Amino acid sequence: MVQPPDTPPRLTVALTFDHDAISSEVDRSLGPVALSRGEFGPRVGVPRILALLAERGIEATFFVPGHTVVSFPESVAAIVAAGHELACHGWAHEDLATLDAAAERDVLERSVEAIERAAGVRPVGFRAPFWSLSERTLELVEELGFVYDSSLMADDVRLYRVRRGDAHDAREGSRLGPPGRLVEVPVSWALDDWPLFEPSPGAVGPMSAPSKVEEIWREEFLHAWEHEPGGLFTLTMHPEAIGRGSRIRVLERLADFMAGHDGVRFARLDRAVADWLAAGEPGR
Ligand SMILES: [Zn+2]
Image 1 (cartoon, rainbow, N blue to C red):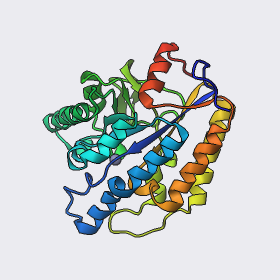
Image 2 (image 1 turned 90 degrees about the vertical axis):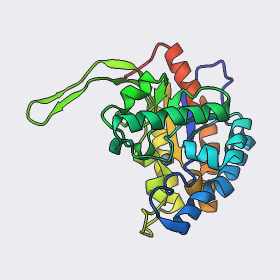
Image 3 (image 1 turned 180 degrees about the vertical axis):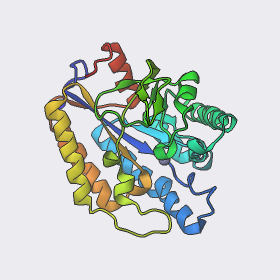
Image 4 (image 1 turned 180 degrees about the horizontal axis):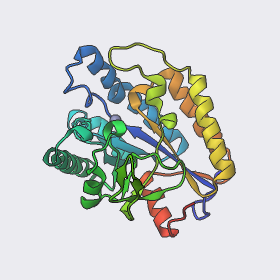
């Protein structure tokens, strides 16, 4: 059973949702069908997710582009009213690796302002759209005062500090820089619903059976629960993908399966990161 909150959890589970809505389609002239697929997020996916979370008393983290904040304010307000964390996810889901320094800073600063207006508090978390970063993005994220990033893949369930000043040379090898202040909440394509469920623009299928995704996520969870005590298991989902009927049923079953294991607690990322810092940054 789930432990009382004052007992250190055996495993913390973070359900995270990238509320992209139509932000990644508006600049790419993909047309009404692609836009309508994004609209499924605020219209259908988010209400189903909020109901699922409320029924189980789970608090979660939503990474929300500024474009979603201004285009679907009622959807974002419902997330805030339910007690979930809002974190930054660009403005119009830009590929930050393609922007120059001034444009990148502008996107990040405007997205912080939008989230702060919607949530009433300054965001502490950032996730790069497309999980695509320029060489300078995370230094800028650190400079702007964020506490954590959730875009890198060097670990699975252990948080770590993002290094600064790594230097790579194909002939001479790579020199790894010292850790900075920014905390990393690692992610994985295997724990992201998008590449498993959603076709690329212009393509249809193949899409995974819900049972396949359920198996991957269940086995990743079980390994973490058995072998990584004190870890943080993070799932990345999108309302327009996980919100479909066959898939939200996967999330319902998994949430109940995970909650049925000793010492499992669900947490927003900002609180999981604060607990990790307070515990002295336990690592490998
Ligand atoms: Zn996204």
